[in-house]
Length: 359
Image (cartoon, rainbow, N blue to C red; front, top):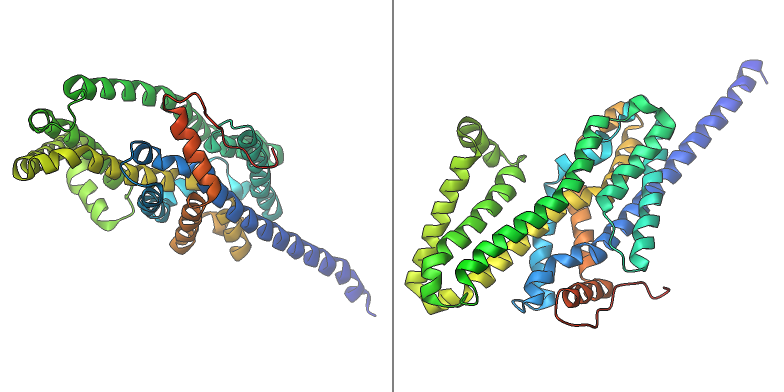
């Protein structure tokens, strides 16, 4: 056998081992993507139906379908958040193909251990924090200090911390304002004729702005709206205009349908809020469970880190991940999570936290 052919044998063997390693990595990543997405639907997304189910507005199975529609829609339009999770925290192009695979699979292993370890003892954990810090640690070990986008990572972490205080303060102030004006007279026609328009209109205006203008930036109609209205005139005129429009529509419904509209105003608003929460969840939390797997799939397809990280994620894959989240919401464990959350927010002293049977 010629010496040149003998010299090629180790190279061929190394290439075969490399392909086998990449294949095992992508199989592991896809398996973890399916498992993690379904489990996040079981544990996290199950809380989306707490408001309408706890208030007995909808049966749980109907509430799950309503919230699931928002989750699937949000997942399909979540490409920006997915991009932040798969390449915004660190710079994959500074790694080799095998190292990039190693980062994404490491993220899944760490994320899974933390998520199910905490959940086993009924303790909530932020999937976003798990994702961000596991990516930071894995990429820092393989690529050093320069590989991490510290400014973007700081924005994400500060956003997580600030959201706790913003949500608490905003929820308290809005609740006090609405309860102070309406109190226990939420089904009284005379009260809602006076306060239903501004309360319901304000809620719908803010939900419409965040869901459409901020959440659907990839849709052509929304792009045109942003270019012609939001960019030249700012956010305030748009939100105030929507507030006035929705307030007038609610007032007209109350005048036309009277007691029937009064009895259904806040239940309908709660259902709309559930859909919007599902949309936000599908956009944001999907990145925590799907981004590493989708990034690994892109790497395996293109066999090049630079090409894979600049290729957009197929919307069919995002749709599939959204369906997996929804399927997780329909499981028996998801029902247990919902019952535990609803009872924790009630006057009951018997609160059973969710835990796997083995625990």
